[in-house]
Amino acid sequence: MVSLIPGIAEKLNIPRAFMSGFKLGRPCGEPFDFETRQEVVHQMLKLATEPAGKIVHLE
Amino acid sequence: MSWHHKLKGRMVVQLAKAMPSAYNRFTLKLTENKKDKVGASLDRPLEEARVALITSAGVHMKKDEPFDALSDGDYSFRIIPADTGVEELEVTHIYYDTKHANVDKTIVFPLPQLRESAAQGKIRSVSDMNIGLNGGTLKPERHERETTPVVVDLLKKDNVNIALLVPG
Image 1 (cartoon, rainbow over the protein chains, first blue to last red):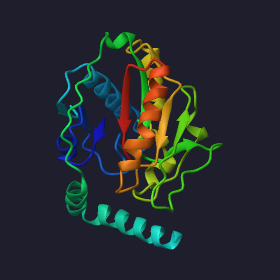
Image 2 (cartoon, each protein chain N blue to C red):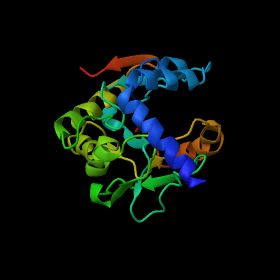
Image 3 (tube, rainbow over the protein chains, first blue to last red):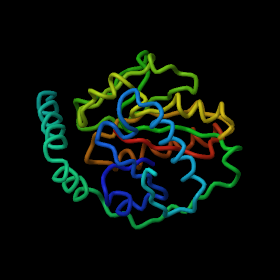
């Protein structure tokens, strides 16, 4: 899942968290920035193939 | 008591915008410490996976009933089929600033980009059981106890292998 607040993923034991680094209300980037949006989806799918317990940040 | 919820929503949105660190600390403090670990792993190559998108950002189809945001919590969910166009979507939520999501729904629900991933062969397909929830509550117990089992059952019946969750 995309997570915006540092520490939440650890506290909830979320199996795979993607810290997108964007603000609340804009978890997948700015409006109409579809290139970033595609990259967020790509990173989430990549993370889904990893073992549970991983937290990654937008590359 | 809708005025009470409206006021609370405005205060939360303003706190998040004006003092994001304080908002983060406030949210973290109210987050329950979960002991159980979920260890599920993908049992096939990504290219063979069927993927669902889940959002707690209050996304639903315009033709569906909006979430009851002005309440102590709406624990219902909405189903959004894979071929849904962004112009068919609506956002109903009061605990984050929906200004950006209202002009571009993909900011909280990147369904077109997930369809693009399927078209590029990165995944097998997009589920017809994409789910919209209203996560604006400090009492998650009913979501966990009542909503989650029903949603999980729908995802299993649709042979979903991966669920991507996006907040508001």
